[in-house]
Length: 239
Image (cartoon, rainbow, N blue to C red; front, side, top):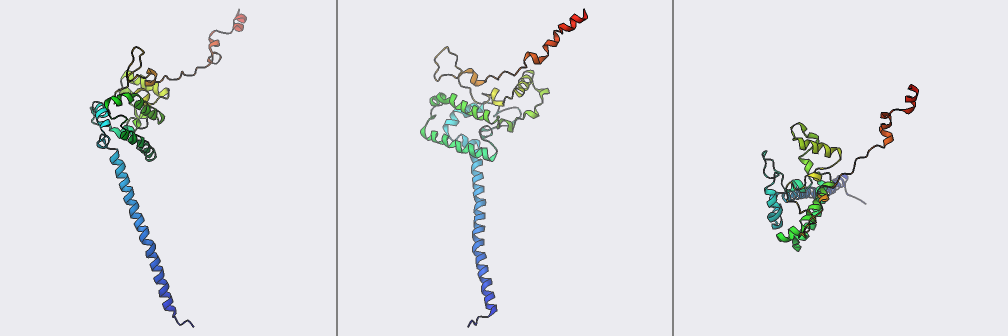
C-alpha cells in the first residue's frame, strides 16, 4: 500500500523539473557565451588580417609591391584619403571576403615554398600575378574600386575633357575600371614588343587594354538610306 502523501509527490516532481531546467540552462548559456566569444575573436582576427601592418609582415610584399604603393596616389594625395592593400584586394562583403581568404591559403603555401622570395623571382612572376588580379577584378566588375569610386556619382562637369570622353565611352561600352586603370598603384609588367628577348618575357599589349567588341550596326535596308536617294517611280510621275 502506497503511504506517500500527495504533497511529497508534488514536491518531488517540482524538484525534478528544477534540476532538469538547471541541467539544460547551464549548457545553453555556456554555448551562447562561447558563441559570442568566437564571433568576437573571429571578427577581430579578420580585421587584423586586413590591416596594412599585417600585409607587409611578409618581406615579399614589403620589399616589392609595398614600395610601389608608397609612391602612388592611393597612399599620398591632396585629399589625404588613403586606400590600403585590403581596400583593393579584399572584398568587404562577408561571403566574398571568406572566399578570398580561402583563396589566400594558396598564397601561404607559396610563401612557404619561397616562390617569390627574391626580387628576381618576383619579377619573373610579376606578369602572371598581375593578370590573375586583373581577371579577378574584371570578373567582379571592379567591385573593390567601386567601394570608393561610384560612376553614378561622377561629376563630369569638373573632369578634364579627356577623362569625360573616356568615362562616357567606357560606360557606354560596358567596360569596368580595371579595363583602363591598370598600373595605378603597382608597376606594370613589361610589354612584348618583338624587338628583343626580354627576361622575363613581356605580355601582349592587348592584355593591358583588351579590344572592345565592335558595336552592332543596322543593315543598310534598316537605316532608311534608300529614302535619301528618292523613289524613281515618284520622279517619273512628276515628269
